Length: 100
Image (cartoon, rainbow, N blue to C red; front, side, top):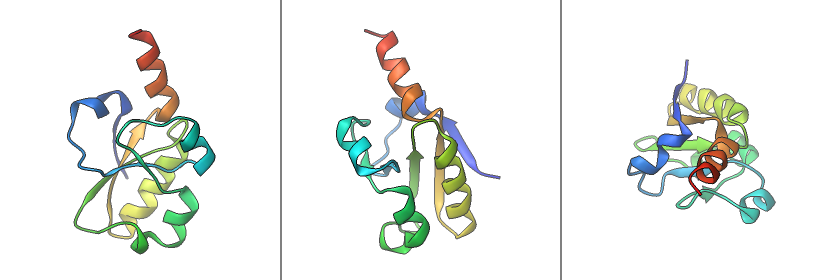
């Protein structure tokens, strides 16, 4: 079991620098959600203790929400508090382009 929320809700909450784009660095550089930092998937799988604190809550997203769901489940099992953003970056972009 993992915690999740619709990525379209991300603009309505305060996340205090805990929004993490888990895609590869080049994807992040091309475009990302404002306020997101980039920590690639493999870094968080191999060494979460180097990047995360167990007392904080983190919001994770990837392209479609699939990898971030897997990673969120894994990290929560390790004692971290993570929330998967359903739909990932593609859903966020679709929402943004529908408003313009």
